[in-house]
Image 1 (tube, rainbow, N blue to C red):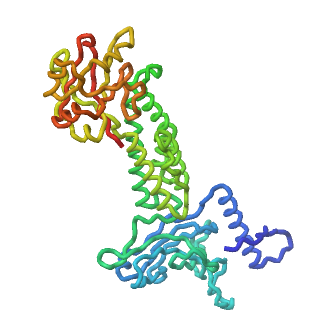
Image 2 (image 1 turned 180 degrees about the vertical axis):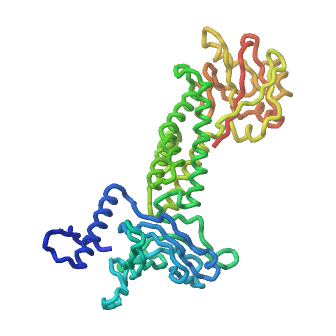
Image 3 (image 1 turned 30 degrees about the vertical axis):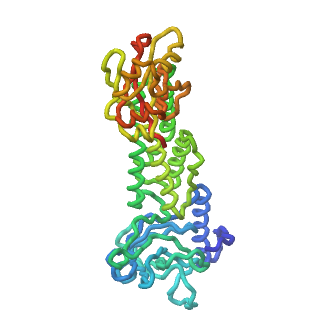
Length: 446
């Protein structure tokens, strides 16, 4: 629609009124409303509700039953069509996919007014008459001339100076060769709750976020005071802070009856921005940009990023392996998974109460690791088994416990090959270190 100067009409005594005065007044009021609306909010256009005859698609026809929408120009259209006046669009058998727009002439013209010449100009409205009651006396009725929107259904085009378009649906040929609605397509909408498919996807996403938030909140009760946090507890605490900063806002949006897509998008994008900080290489996650006219792509990226990031922080970076005490000095791991031995890493976690830290060096040197069939031979001959290396800073993938020292089991050498063959590992602790608490942690390589 053209944006020319819109003047405010002046009402004064002795003024000879004409239809142009009222037409100008109508245009002025509409321009005021649109100007304020677009100044206060971006993307104040889209579909509020549209209902199509899905049975007509099987006959190759798109038929509109009712519509409530705001065009980009700010014009609000709300109409329920009778059977004979419903806008229709015939689908070509040679094509497999269409994006259909509702369209309106880019003017204020009304056609078929008695006494006015028919210029052949494409008009936005058609003349009609309705009988209305007096607001103060229902017995007084009068026939009033009204402008009925002359909506058209057209194949969406990037440019057309004579009409303004608003994409509303996509149809594609189905398995049996008949056209059907593409329910995955999301047009520009004013309210997320008005689009069933988008609303369903958002609800699933919010439920996933809420489940993770509640799990972190529940876990917080067992973590103790902040001053005693180890690396793992600190990570969980920071994650809880990240979710807490945006979850109330996201939850409020999900429970509201009207939700603007750009507002919810920004809240979800804030969460992505927070969670990226927990990734070693956050550069692989480009923050999605909001495209009101391509919500399918915008919310698709949001959904994909959040699912990936929550999956990443929820993944078990390490798992404890069951350690059996055969005696005070010998411990055994049975039925090991071959993947954890050949594709992962194994760490021995040791806790030993001692005034000096010299026990750490002794542990790496004197504790022996070997397959069950070889351990007694190694102990008797004082030969070395599988090598242990102390880790001053365990990898981030290891769930570190406070007070424990971590030793990496080096996966090479003849002794290690025997462990892989037997899928079992025994640990010998010398008398000088008996009383040490041991745990074995398996870490999957990524």
